[in-house]
Image 1 (tube, rainbow, N blue to C red):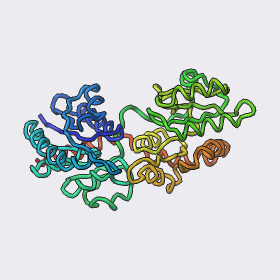
Image 2 (image 1 turned 180 degrees about the vertical axis):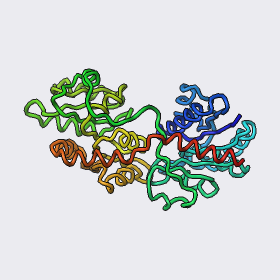
Image 3 (image 1 turned 90 degrees about the vertical axis):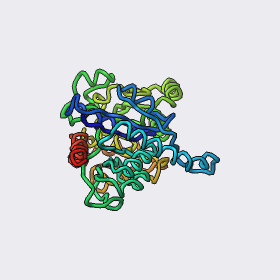
Image 4 (image 1 turned 120 degrees about the vertical axis):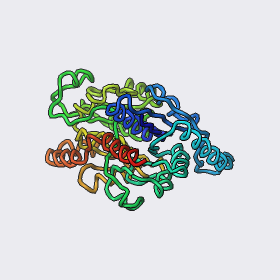
Length: 368
């Protein structure tokens, strides 16, 4: 029986790649592997991971606040306390390998494992490495990445290109099924723009849609799937009620993302690591609107990595309200450009990313 600890959290971008790797481990090793997650007390992983059927233990770790805050005084104590607790967890679980997926929850677990001689593997989702992974990389055995050029942050001899592990099946589609179109009440005769801003929503993308709808003088020549997010759902419903428009599906969530990707001709989206990886796998021409409210401006760097390969288009958050939809419509009118973007972004997709990470984990437990 092999025992693997997976640690990461704070956001879905750290949690779900870890879950995807757990699922790949279970598929391959079935009853011969035991998995334990370690997260941060009070964070979303403590709810999401058990709901998916996995055991998780929480640490009292907390991150630094970016502004002056008295809670920052407690951080050193919480780090020390978390490292000691992580050592006990690793010892009691008899871990063969510890895998960190970023977020401050993973730092104490990686540091504890490294001090105990337990092999560690890091998976970095973004094109600009996070602070936790940079601090933990020196003693890590392998570093799994999703972007070229990560030698800026890590030792080249440790880097393995794996891509970002994703849950679910993502693949390019050559046609729009009647079922997918009917699900959103769309026509096969009009092109479709997918506007997606995450589960909570994105104010910028919602304001962009409001501006575009308000500018219409007649029925639009395109149709839109508009995911508003939970926070903005009521406000956007009231806006649409006051500004009815043909061919716009609006919802807080998109339950059938596979259908949404299938019918979309152009996607307007934030550029979080997992979202970028999904879009590469489905091969959709994309206009990225990077969030400015993330550490190290990593969403801009994620998007730039694709833009530099002529695999996507980007507009800044401050310009997106005015320019976002016009840019998307301009893309739709340029069939040659659409084909180029579609081809180039699809080349970047890595379908077996979770299995690639599993192979790196296996190499380490075989040496331990």
